[in-house]
Length: 247
Length: 342
Image (tube, rainbow over all chains, first blue to last red; front, side):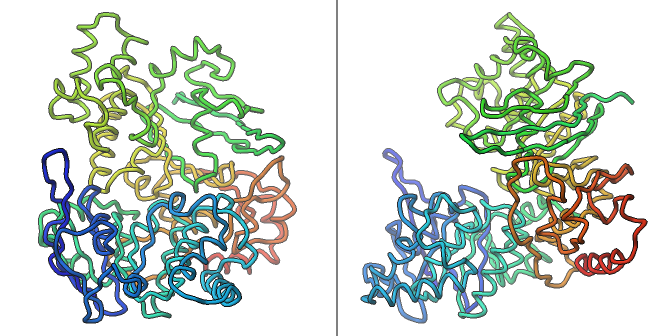
């Protein structure tokens, strides 16, 4: 996975505000890049710009050597995203079956039976009971909803997953479940993750490499152990010194 | 020493159509002057309901069915609304969780702070303004005169939280209740706000009741901590004692599920707590954590444990004296707990 000089700006009245300024990075196959930074630093905008959910000003995204063009359905299938708030990212009027079958209807021409089989497989994978298919999102807890959202993103077997603060809306005990689940899935399917978070401890737990973002730029990118041992950029130092310790 | 706040055997229930939920069950604790007490637990364990019942801010669907709350010899539960108002804000200040929702978007910052002053202390506009400027600089807002004239949408999350703290402490309360004051904020801003709270507490000789689910915040600023589970206190004691040697299996598991930045630790898989918070609708005769507890015994399903009476008190059959006389299956259980702890 490679991102090359991505830029994104928004218009604010007559002014142009640059939110993502010339960001480039690459992620190795089946590894995790953690992306940290304060709110407003452009993390989520970067994620959405990679997927072309925001139209980019310039720059390109390569996956396995080929450029991803998101106007092709074929390419959109390869990269998926899990959003921060599981209370906002599931349509409250759809049943779980509708939510999970939507990707298949858009991207495949499977028969209904085949879709049901695939969905049951997904539910097993995410340790969700199979009898939830005809329930509505409001019947579930935050952790279960986030698992449903992850199931939807994995439906088409993407190789690259963007996780935009997947655990920050969850309780600590549930947070640990989801993090472990994500690690297990990565090992099993050789997934590549871009993991966005503001909690350094969480990022350290899952990421191989960490990129620190400030004001739309990546100021430091390093192996995660090295970043914690020898932070170089003043902002990284500030971020590390503001961590709280349990013991 | 004499307590400032004393909550005794408090139980709160919520009624929703035909459903009844016991949100707070038989909770007793004290807060002494100049003390910082944390209440920790998962969402839905009754932390916020407890805080709201202290200030009489519970919604209409809630009812206090038992117990008493006394503040400095005033019984808060028997006070009329009008006398409660003279305590709310003046004696006990409160900071709410979400700085984006708890300021009035159509009022200038200055007006919102002065509102609290006019309700309790001052009548002169000029004097109120000067106090406002002072409090704004005390919560480290760089340009008080300018911020006084601003609207909430012009400020960042961290600044809004500072304004909320300013509103809560402007009347110099003796007790500050902070409900998840840093949950919605960034890490760097979080440390600033925590430091501010610490400094204000010292400067004003306040006590603080901090409600949070973040163990690292508790470890940072609190003297005493209370762990709640399904509406009841399961462990209570000095923060350092509990974090270094948790007794109740729930506390231990809660601590194990927090990712840490400990350099000396090799990669350790996090241990999540399986299962869900039970919904409790009537007084129960068993341990509420038994279903999720790795060291549950037979007695846990039959009898409710009492809160032990030592310094670090726990509500668990592993420590309840009524049980310790019978040893047989206890020793095996203790081994299991030790293993879970590793």
